[in-house]
Image 1 (tube, helix red, strand yellow):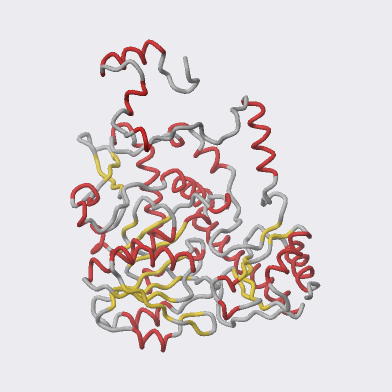
Image 2: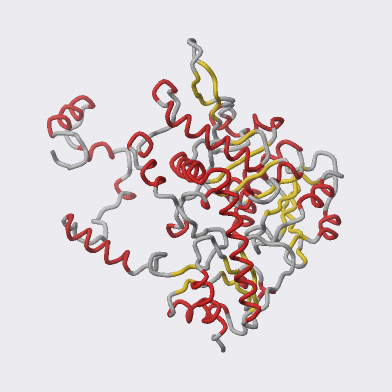
Length: 449
């Protein structure tokens, strides 16, 4: 065979060319004018054998800092959590690892059931009755929620709290441009959405209000009070972007009045892996279930009364309505959704609650130790597992020195919040030990300009 991984012999190739009436594969490109074709060789290194290539790639990979060598206190949307070993064992099985879209339920029951279980667990965590089979990541799920709210209410104004992840706000802005939506940011006070300023922005022309819970600073937004303000205006929706691990302890947004809850399940069974891929989730009310982007898996029975699973409520707008579609999402993150499902199942309800509590307890221990070192937390209200502290030096300088000591430091907030110069967002998860926290605080306290 000419190519190792393409099962086509020279005879196969000759037969196909004869069938279409050509003598060379170059003739397939005759319709493309010669002057616009690429006329030289690509500027690439010469091919290497497998052993040499693996050695080169391993050398390049070794230049990266990884979480096996460094102790990380960096969060800001991607977190270093415990991943049960069973996760990799399950998702590496070929029937899951190489599975494609489960359009044929007669041969996809295993994958369909796994997706259904994912939907069920997300529904329980969010306090909403309907959840889809996953989305690409949290920010795109949030942007889809925004466009859904605009389509449902026939309004084009969106209020987004400035305490929402800055990258998620950027994704919303990108979606909004194509949908001709007006995005207005609500300011914050003491690390949470300023309710008075939010009230000033609200009106009967607002499609939805977007808040994060816990928010980007790690603070717990007062969703009940925000919902009371939002629901004074008929049709206006409350959209919450939520860390699903935090929902193991906090009151679910659905119980506090949220119409749509989205987020990222990276916290359950998905490693940091340099920023992706992740797994977004999307949960909402029964009223909106036919507007949900992506896929939904439903439970049913076959002609013999046996339980089975199928894709259901599929309007498939991206196929049917074309330019009138409210979403172009026609895929999901089934493998990562499975990883999250296995992780949640392994932890169990009690385990998720305990894991959330450990994050909260260790983050509070970190805050107390920082205060003893003279680094006081900036915001005073309730928080989950991230804390903001002001440093006596530039955060970039501090992180460079921390890295030399074996630590990946926190997020430099000045990049997204110019008013927070020299402020670091520090994340503490359940796998950080007392010794790691104490040593990190000591090193951070010893840093001076």
